[in-house]
Image 1: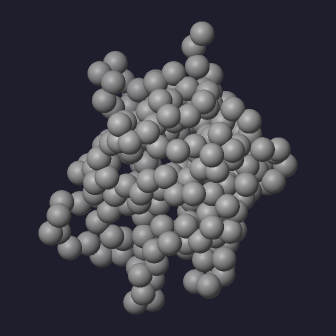
Image 2: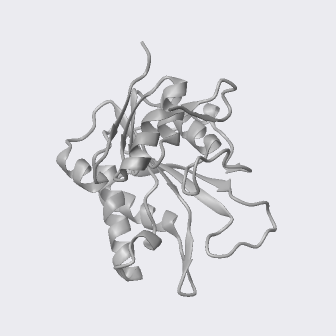
Length: 223
């Protein structure tokens, strides 16, 4: 049977609050940073970010995982470490960190401004534990192809999908803030069902159509 994909055009927080714990699923989130909340001060956004991470984790079943893909930001002359905030959320909810990987956004030694040269990917669970014989690299030199600036990238999506497929019992990936659907397209490609939540009607429609190209290494936009 072909894997399924459903994209809800909705506010991800509203959808999550109205949804019971997602049995048989693992969750993946790449939550928006302060640039999308002009009405928030930095402390207000940090509070929103942590509470949203807690909500995502609270909907993750004990035998599933919650994976976060996040890039740090530099704001008002300070460095905002999103991995630290997500780990604070995990401690509060009671999930353990299984792994923490770094994806390079720019070559080593290159100076970047506004956004650091790497992104974090962190994986948490209540009961899943890592099979060390199936370990994967901790530092990945390239995110892979992205369909838009804030996309996860093909390689990042593939690593997360393969981990869920091989080391959990989850059959479905739930992706709040799914954007243009790169994570869901790759999840379907490896055989997992996918559910996305995206507020933008334009991005939600793209998320319904995005496919992995025949080469298995890039994206193919249909429609």
